[in-house]
Image (cartoon, rainbow, N blue to C red; front, side, top):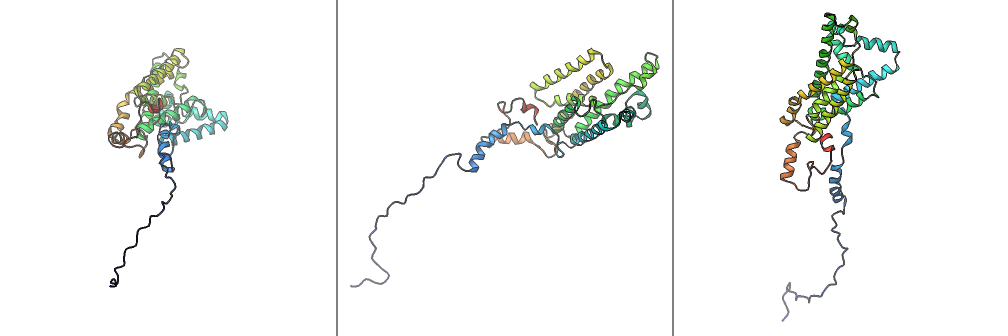
Length: 292
């Protein structure tokens, strides 16, 4: 009998030849993503040297102040010497000017760099204040600088005025030329030391204090040299202030919006993802303590 429609007999199975496929590479470095994963730890160990210098967004106070100092110094280099001397004399924080215009001369005297933009004061200003602002923020950095500049200036000039009144110094001492940013920079060094690791903090403090003490022993300008040591002590006294930002968790190593909550992020990395690094002693060396 014929078979019913739709019920065809099954065909015998015919073996098919194997299809050759190209071998799949399972190397961990194949492809751009895998290569990026391999190179990422190496990049993280490279010190971010560009962060040693101020930027408009990361360190606005240091960047703006440095730009203003550069403009004043460049203008002074091309202006007549008599005009520059007159401007410096008018902004000097000597006793005579402090009695008449204290606020004006305290601000104006901080616009001059002894030696110009190529001096060690300019380099110290840029490096120290940039590092301090990236760790403590712009307001605290400005406060430390201003505190050291004002307090050290008054502490060195008030005794001069008293000595003139008592007859121990001549009247010409009331017009002693005094200007510059060195007091503020010294205070910033003292404050920054409190935010460094212990293996870098004490060498910085002891080394800088030794240099200032050597200047004092040389007795070239004892009033200014005493002011530098006093400014350094003022900066050390601000450690609770500059460290307060790190405790509050508003970003210990960067400016506003940079690196906020880095400690919590590192704790999360250690507890969670594997293969990440939050600054182990073997990566970065001294830069781990100095570079923000």
